[in-house]
Amino acid sequence: MSSSSPARAVTRTLSDDPLGGTVRRTVLPSGLRVLTEAIPAMRSVSFGIWVAVGSRDETGPQAGAAHFLEHLLFKGTKKRSALEISAEIEAVGGETNAFTTKEYTCYYARVLDEDLPLAIDVMCDAVADSVLAAADVETERGVILEEIAMHDDEPGDEVHDLFARAIYGDHPLGRLISGTEETVTPMTRRQIQGFYRSRYTAPQIVIAAAGNLDHAAVVKLVRQALRGTPLDTDPAAPAPHRATTPAVRTKPATTLVEPKETEQAHVLLGCPAIDRTDDRRFALGVLNNVLGGGMSSRLFQEIREQRGLAYSVYSYASQYADSGVFAVYAGCAPGKVDEVLDLTRAELARVAAEGVTEVELARGKGMSKGSFVLGLEDTGSRMSRLAKGELLYGNLMPVDELLARVDAVTLADVNGLAAELLGRPMSLAVVGPFDSGAFTVGR
Image 1: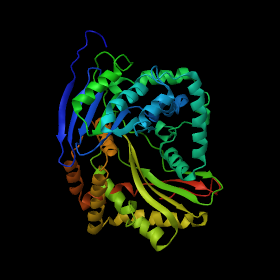
Image 2 (image 1 turned 60 degrees about the horizontal axis):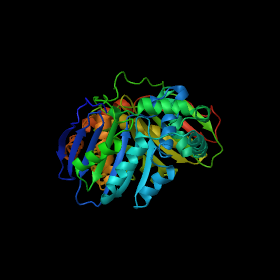
Image 3 (image 1 turned 45 degrees about the vertical axis):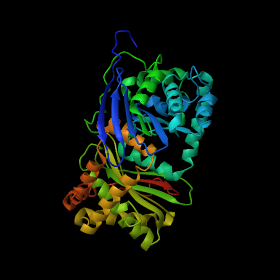
């Protein structure tokens, strides 16, 4: 950091949640943000480094670069080898991992509270100062190609990627997070290094920690760990949130079939939905619960419990900054696909036309509130909540406010959204022993 840059960070308390602990946020001069939730009753801490870069930020030839980089950052720094990175954390009984999504990448560790200084030093070193050795690039290229091949052998996963392509086409949201053999094989160290240094900048990074900790101590340890690294930079403001306009243009309803000799067929039927900042997301969560969010849902009861047509059937909603999807998944015997699709389409049309009942509304709201609160019972989920609130929404909605927003959802809210979404033409993705023209687009 230059000598003229201010050494002072800006800290404020975001909440003192009765269901959790005190949440504080510090913005370092570099633009990097640190959020913590102090939970004295815990004896562990989850620590995560979140980067606002995912697969949608790649160009076509770069497809898979974010995921490739995620693999490489644990392979060694100027101070530590790959073995030392893992051994130092495992020696204290901790665990580390990472994952890449379409809009962000996360590197995290979970350790005993007394070992948090070690975790901060190791994780900051790995993310900020990886050397990306040429030999490691080649080793991990082989690992990633095996991962891609393994994914191709999992039709239950593959159908979700096929569905994304049906909805988004060539848009980055429609591409595989891992990239493909055609993009990963020729990717050079120089390309990955360029992606690393241009994208992993302090303003794009949020550090979050939850557990038995002291906020000021965490900030001090982070600053010490990043001193002298490429993330120790001149003053800057935190990066703005990902733009929500213009909305992503989705494809007209289409059907994609991946012929594959499988014992079970995998189908996804769905349509474009709302983005993550849309206030109707709470109503969508309730609607999803009613349709296919659990064992009491309409689709589960109709397709599995009453007719025994599928072992797995559920609905879900995925949301991005500027887009979203709603879909129904089913895995069934190939000979039962037509019946499953007919029943699914009929149920979606029924809810679009008639709506849900007051009893279903109450159950759907209870499921939303319960799953959210029960999901906050460990430090990892609380750490994730801090980071996502900052990175994706620009604020941390208090637990009580979120529960109140769910409680405020009305029958008119749910039924209005159902009429709008479920009446849309539906795209279909199928993986199984079928010809590519075996299905037609239907509503």
